[in-house]
Amino acid sequence: MRPVNGLHHITAISGNAQENVDFYAGVLGMRLVKKSVNQDDPGTYHLFYADAEGHPGTDLTFFPWEQMAPPTIGHGLAAEVQLEVPVGSLVFWGERLERYGATVSRIERRLGHDVLPLVDPHGMRVALVADETRRAFEPWRGSAVPVERQVRGLYGARLWERDAAATVAFMQTRMGFEKLAEYDGWTRYSVREAAGVVDIRETPSERRGRWGIGAVHHLAWRVDDDAHQLAVREQVEEGGANATPVIDRFWFKSVYFKEPGGVLFELATDGPGFAVDEDPAHLGESLVLPPFLEPQRERIEAVLPALTLPTIDR
Ligand code: ZN
Image (cartoon, rainbow, N blue to C red; front, side, top):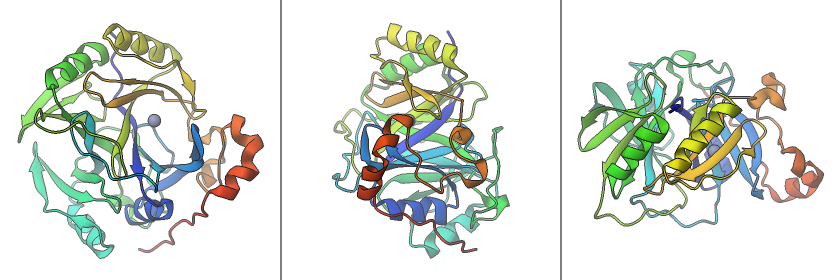
């Protein structure tokens, strides 16, 4: 069995695109590394925020689907996105987030690390985790946030499950996860030393979760290359999942499937990366379309709202 290599990206559903840019690129200071469209719904944006180079494992992406209803938070859904920040930076972050009107909770301790839970402008639960895991991270010099405080990448996610045992068995035997620890009703899993944990809680009396503005859409797990992706695809199919064929997303290749509890997972290759169709110095500045949508550029640009990058405010 070939394990996955931790988190590749997390994709969520947001409201207004400009408000999403203002929060993630402005307040949180992440780099907008790709401004594209939803390949299955090209009238809407797909926005990617990451470190300066868009390393796998640093990337949080959004579909701004303003017309959608709020989600039903329930089982079969990821209920929180965890971002890694440097140890000792949470007081800075608490003050900065409050200054810009974010809803911030008190700092709590989880498994020996300080964690700052907050709610983003469209209702998504985010937690800043003060820890420094071994990961590829390139600071973004164009950020409003000083280099020594910057978001370093994806730390993990929380999942609610109706039947945790089925999901856990699947993730252990088909994807290589191992149990790390338990805390406050959550059980944490990860793949060896790879960055990207999953905290699972069994919530049998909750409703089935449903997507909406402020919900996580899917979690993508890293695979090295095409061969690794096909091997894991076969493993999850043998475990009962119904996986899609390989889809070329141009910055990486993707396979999608639902784990037994219903959370949408993806297997995403490390390469070729975000610099394949843009100058690395100017990532995210102009609208990038996959080759098959390029002939429709004029029509697509006409329906997308204009987006401006937040001005630097240190
Ligand atoms: Zn994805």
